[in-house]
Image (cartoon, rainbow, N blue to C red):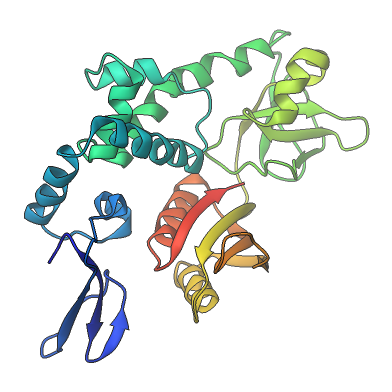
Length: 301
């Protein structure tokens, strides 16, 4: 029954598979004749599996599938997780060797079969990139000796070697405390603060290198604006659940737009602008949104 399960009814009403049962409720399991387990069940953030025994059963099922199918299934799962965490240029071969795999395809197969926990792979990739981030962009843009460091006007950014200079947060990448940041000296807006992986900064390293300047987070303000993109299967109460979750986590919503004109039937794209104090809170919110029923993808833009 578990492998062919496709849904459930509680007291005659269809509920998501993540529904928490209460004593005395009448349960009916909905199955499909040719149904098979979904790989989403293995994602801890989705909340489908509660016991180690059920997780082991699903792992066993996928281990018996063809390796080629696991590779095909594992690649988009890993790509989606790296994109969700905002990780770029990950050395997949080195990541594979971290888990004692000789080939990248073996890593994909391990993820596709459920042998590897997705969040652990994502954390390993982030740890691998951490020293690169710390030694790449900041060192490249450090073209003068540091004389002193002063807090710039407006948002708690420390600009090295420059005193009393206006700074603004870039609207393209909207960095928040916890992000690696770089300053770009503009002609009219003072120092514009970007994330170090922003496309504008990557282009400037080749075209306008002399305009880049080293900056750090100083005494930060209370909240920063971040763009979030959500893709979901449309259902009644979807927007209510999203806004309720944000409100319960004391996250302010500045803007919310929906677009249901998609090629895929019943899919909807939701664009949010929210206020968060930093990357830690942002990560919590993205994970919580991803656990809501019918949510397909949540990522920072």
